Length: 475
Image 1 (cartoon, rainbow, N blue to C red):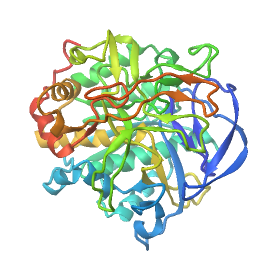
Image 2: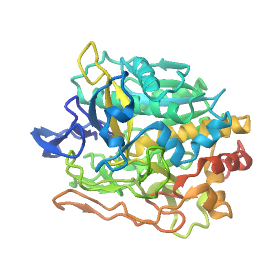
Image 3: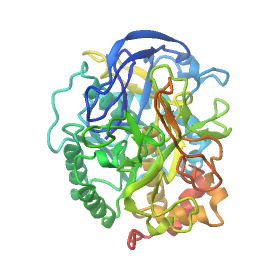
Image 4: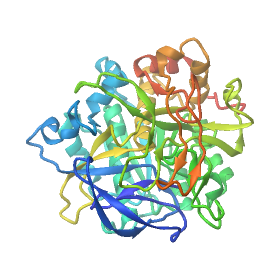
């Protein structure tokens, strides 16, 4: 499955099964993300499952200064913006629920990632101090063990970055919820599935976030086996969330499994395509002022990011494995197969979120602050929204998609979602040597941003009203 990641020198990497697909020049991002300098030529680092992130180093954390004084990207007039938890909460009306005591209290969010971060507990505390958040109850489980962490391994380092983003931002949305990080021993498909199966069988939490993916044909485990685990989760009332990917309508080829001779090919991302999963796409959010006033959104499709040689866009499209589930009946743009994503969330690099990570530097691990973008930004935050909804309802809501589509097709759509109607997810390599045609946004659901981004203060009570634990029946 795939993820975007970074080395300590702040280079962006992608992961896929093949190791020698192409030789490219990676450009490192400057600390203000507005200028770039050439880096040495590097091969892409490939691994079976990809994280869906890109990130940029803003420098060493100084807890003696406010975030606004440390990070120029927080200025409303900065050419490249970044956002704090308070701004995102305000833009999506999460703060309204928090002010009324709906914080995720009594609920548990499970994060499934690969490898480990030896500094995640410390980094979470740094993050909380920087943004004046309460420390949550946090634990780490590695059911199959993990290798000793190596900061010089870009694959492990990239997953450590994913861990920082996932844990810290799930907590930012649902500060009262417990968080359990489940670490797979590698990013290989069977190891990720083993970690997921453990989380489900042990019933570790109310909602599970998965910030990784790959083309359906690329999976080294049968999707039916993954679906069986997801079915067990839904039967227990567990909500499943997954990122839809950051290469638009494309996925990286992984010969001989998938993609043929192409570097990228048209495909949607698993596990997001599973009908039991709520798939999260990405937008570029204008959060306006320092307080985070909502200023509008467009579909994520950034082509001027010098750290990667191709489009950074919201993953979306149609499954070739799963037929259209009943909850997608009546959506005019969906044919015979499952369409993704279901919903979306802020995920641009220009408009990235701030997070703390120490493990990208050698011991004693100096804490740095990074900006993160990608659909991995949205997956843990939607998991946080699900935790808020569980607390509001006083029970596990579990499978959300039937309710989400009922809202999308009904009279409460405009008050529950920001409908994204500008942009597309066509993918191309910067020199246009390879182009994968994508889809355009439209009114209502589309295979770029789904139903759009949440107006949480309205959406959560509606979910609590509409969701039934057994709504997955009849898919």
